[in-house]
Length: 191
Ligand SMILES: [Cu+2]
Image (cartoon, rainbow, N blue to C red; front, side, top):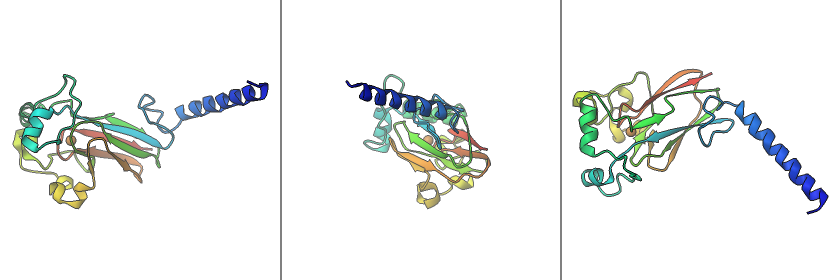
């Protein structure tokens, strides 16, 4: 290697190091451990532990595409917990609270095995599938009403392995939940 090439390489390393350092002070500073974070982007992940055998027997082939490594939950157990008001914590948005600067894009990635929604609501409440509400309540909050038959709800759907980008959030507190699994909830605070 020539001296010039070595110098160019060293200079390149310096630029990379500088970029990494600057990133730590960016809008994703609050959750630096989340992969994929960079200036202007903050990542949220949707997780679940659907058991492919029991979910697909009830919902159809390929409904649940989870990589079950011993952490799966059967459909019956999920329904029992949700009905009893003790829903399975394996169905979750992470982080629970995200603080971002205005202008940051929130990228929601479904890393679970089944579909979810990431729906902004005025107040958390029941989703559109009564068996997954506490006490199997049929009541549903307005933002989830109509289920996927409603374009407004369908637009907030995230399929397995896909992502939804949320842009244009105003300053202040925003609440998001899943309209299928109503205990999947999180808060986005825009500063
Ligand atoms: Cu969900």
